[in-house]
Length: 126
Image (cartoon, rainbow, N blue to C red; front, side):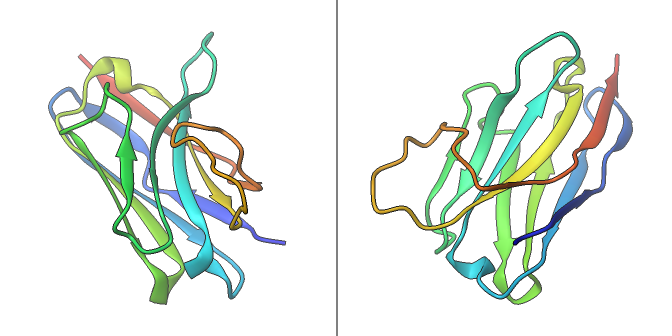
């Protein structure tokens, strides 16, 4: 069982930055695909970004491309989400997720993940 704990959320003005962290338990972290999702009030959860086990493979939702950067430190069992140029529409609860290796292709934006964190609130004021 893997536990994921997000941190780093908060209140920021539009145009500001935040860095979210997601610390994972377990020894197989380096093998997991890690993703970030978000859910705004009254809306469905949506894909934000994901990073493959090798850190070389990243994918971003169009809405955050060029503003957000995902990275991972396998030595620290942690994945990060650097969020710059934040907009009020980025306001949401942000969740990290971990996926064990699959033998089949999984689309980049899929929410097929095995483990989820509890979420951290990000609020961007205008």
